Amino acid sequence: MQKKFDQELEDRLVRYASIDSQSDENSPTTPSTEIQLNMLNLLKQELTEIGAQDVELTGDSVVVATIPGTVPGPTVGFLAHVDTAPQFNATGVKPRVIKGYNGGDISFPDDPELVLSPEEHPYLAEKIGHDLITASGTTLLGADDKAGVSILMTMTRHLLENKDIPHGPIRIAFTPDEEIGRGVTEQLPKDLGADFAYTLDGQEVGEIEYESFSADRAVIRIEGVSIHPGLAKGKMVNAAHLAAKIVQTLPQATMTPEVTDGREGFIHITDMNGGSSEMEIKLILRDFEMEALEAQGDLVRQVCATVQATEPRAVITCEIYHQYRNMRYWLEKDMTPVDLARDACRELGIEPLSVPIRGGTDGSRLTEFGTPCPNLFTGMQCIHGPLEWVSVQDMALATELCLSVVQKAAGTDGNSAG
Image (cartoon, rainbow, N blue to C red; front, side, top):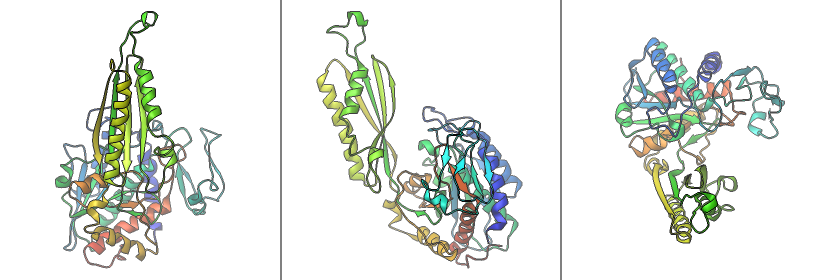
């Protein structure tokens, strides 16, 4: 059924992934990088060319557009983000298509020692015969979330060309800076104008997610006492030594990403910068429950205070910043968008899978700001690194899912996909 979308999805992802649109947490601008505007302006142009209405680039650098309804119904929103993760090289992406995957190890032309193995990645073993897209070995692919972008553009084009498909009004949004937690502002619910929405930012086929981490960011700054090391006895206070004490005192055996999974939260040191006179430590705090997240913040502050007490001549500050909250707190009060997606999934012969996201999406913040927004699968795998890949056929199933959802939302048969 989904073969009618395969080539378009392949072409779109290869084209979009070739465009560098990596975000930058250290930039104060919106978007955080100018190169994201290359993607945003391209999508704005393409939406206009295929006949979408109300196409605009908002003041928050979000491209929004309307697919007019063909029948009465609630307004359904769909979102995908254009930025790629800052954690790995995203410059010079060279997407490649592996037609009819044969089930063996996948090598990479630009890094012969890199191997994507079905033994280490069991989901890959399920994709024999699929058309896979990967990068060349020295960059991420950017399927997170250009797979989502490709799916939404394909759905939009299809609905605009097939006006016999019954659906209510649909709003499309392409956001910047999702990877650094700044893709959704408090203005977006108004700009989107949807009764509820979905992010296309999930992974395995069948995933319909309505739980995410709650998240804060911590920044610790340490001011030591600087003096020439030859004259330092009894005078120097080395900020780097104090930073090391803080890191060593934080729980490492029980509360870091590498030793936690499932519903366990973590404290993760992302950056350390500075020298003997000044140091800065950046951390992210994650847990599914607010009480546990607050306890993590208290623990970080307590560790800073303890190290500060050992050296009163230093100045140690710790600031905790709100990032996003578990979407479950709001969605569990009205599961309508989740139930619609689950029903649509089952009609496609796919058993829906709802597991807590050990991360967040634009939907986490959008839900917190008043627009319920669970997350749907795209098929992307091994994200944020050089092994990233996606199945074209998985993306096609996600496209079919979106088409079914909008019909069900309008109270019509989700199988009238045109």
